[in-house]
Length: 422
Image (tube, rainbow, N blue to C red; front, side, top):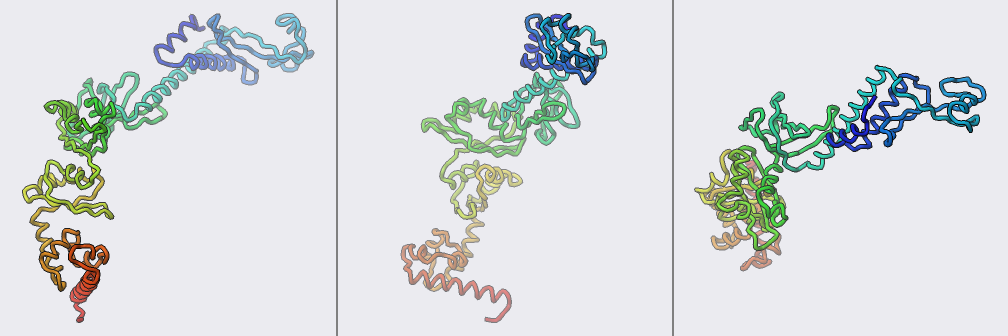
């Protein structure tokens, strides 16, 4: 039934990358099923692959009995000794080899279907394991077809899918065109492994830089974070583990060759490479590149920063539709409030005037309080007296008076706003 079975097993394992034991087990189970179709489900059967003769041997086991009551599972002592084993005794289990050629066409067809299905299952398992370990890596393939807007990619031994949500909106592809994508997920479904690919994932940009910049793959430069608006603009922050290596320069490459290779793969997506800094204020300033920053006020408790830029840099810092500051927020993890110098000055002027309502606070003192981050009556009223007393020229007694007076002024303003007479 299976000519040159030994050679067939070896060839199938080699061509399809399936473990030899899986193929042998599939063949044994298939022959067992075929035997049960011929002999019935009640008989005791075993199937084994005989490597020496290259054959799947099927054995039916019968109990040796003085008197046979169940011919399907029992054999008489006389017949057992005459035909199979001269030393057979009642109660022995005797394995009788069955000729597989007697199974019939339907049984053989069933066996073939089982083998085909088992081999397919094994192939699917192999593909799943292979690509599951490649999750987070780049995949190269060819556009095979389109299904409802999704791109089906031929990866060689498997197919990948780029859903509409993982495609860059302005990119178009033709059948047969080469395509590169990021393996973001591998699922097990009834049809086999589903390999989800992406060209919009931040990891795609990171993986491209790992390919183009040897210092990253060697671990000399670390990519700290990536923020993307696919097809439009991206920011990537990097730091060096070697003080002699400039991380930004290494990623840009000689005459911009390295970053340009990434830009070309992303079909023109603009990329800002930002140096990471432990000083978070400096990091945020770099993230707002190419805009220049004059000064920064940090609110650690709310993880927020107020960034003051020159008037002519405001639109650059914010970016079209807020894109630049939005990407900087994603990159750094800080809330960023960008203000122009004139807007900050206007707000500061209000704060100055309010602080100078307190007796003993003039312009010089108000400016000193501003530098300490106390920019309003509310902030002064909420200040710690010891912290305030530590400011040069302000003693503990004065600090307590200012805090108390600031609170009274605020209360008075609240009453006036409500229209209640004091």
